[in-house]
Amino acid sequence: MKTTVFSFLLALPLAAQAPAAKTPAPTPVPAPAAEPSVGAAIDGTYQFVPGQFIGAAEAMPEDKYNFAPTQGEFKGVKTFAQQVKHVAAVNFAMGAMILGEKPTAGMGEMEMGPADLKTKAEIVKYMKDSFAYARKAIQSITAQNGSRPIKNPFGQGPDWTPIGVATLLAFHGMDHYGQMVEYLRMNGIVPPASRR
Image (cartoon, rainbow, N blue to C red):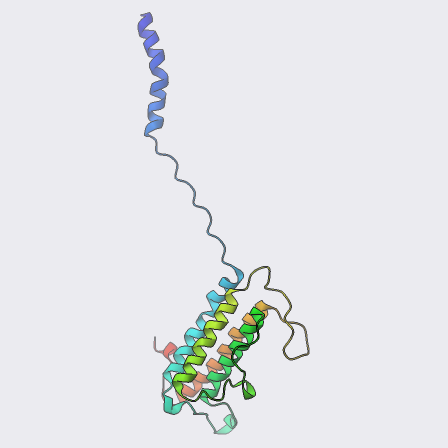
């Protein structure tokens, strides 16, 4: 009897461990995803600007790149090519502001970019390069540098900030995109974004 009780007492701890060995370890809770940087968050929205703009610029046939409406209140507005070049020139200038660099591409007369860009292919390449540069600049914005002062380029008014300039990049591009859509439709072309 003593041997049975003694054997039972020895087996009890082993029996208690057996179910524990069969129980799977708890699944570790995944670490929360890192929050995107300020620049990545802004670029997540800004990426739609070049997406829409490039599609519109590529949709206009080369022989219509110098089109500008002339009737009514349209007299004296920029041509389609000038719209594209202007946005590209401003993208380079504002990207340089964010990065604290001197603009690599000239603004040209009336902020129309380099005068030697004449063909659709040259203008589209200039525009694509400008959006790549603007996105690089936006992605460089952090919580630490996003509110640093940037001298107002117009000389009057408060200083700007990298976050503010990134906002202006989006606003400016979409403002001219809207005008380009009108030019496309005046030429019987449905903008790519409206074809979906």
